[in-house]
Image 1: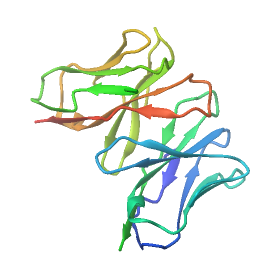
Image 2: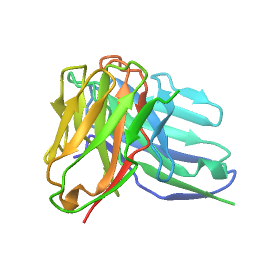
Image 3: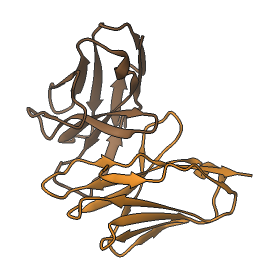
Length: 111
Length: 115
């Protein structure tokens, strides 16, 4: 079982829609959680960290559920420019500090 | 600010040839990483260097070697390229491997094709 699992999608949504992605992780001792965004043929870039209490950045909301070992990303009022692949990243746990990446979820926002 | 710089951006190799991918960061980060990204597989760790002078294997190290030349530079070498090494390679750096809330910065990637 891969350490970090994501639904690859693609999620195909119209502009203005609300869309949510989940990501599950297998290591219960994991300590830090992130969402990265990767545009086609580009490098990943940090979208937001995920805090235990949940956090929001404009149209983006991230949540962490430690009991069920998943994190989520909610995008409200989707824009065409939100089309990208969203990577779930987990660090820490069991002495490992290496960032572990999920395979990514593809989002396509259409007019 | 340059951040993380990778060279080359594109490369075509013949099976059996060797090459070195270069990575340099100007952010004074301690830890550096090499990942490969294949369709449907996500980013997989090849090697990492927690600090200058140390290197360790990641998930898929076979066929690769690395050198942490100094704090800024971390190179990845393919001694005898194989078609299975066709991939996009990303170098990343993080400020302190044990500081778990810090961001990973990536280079622009190297698109390698082995024919």
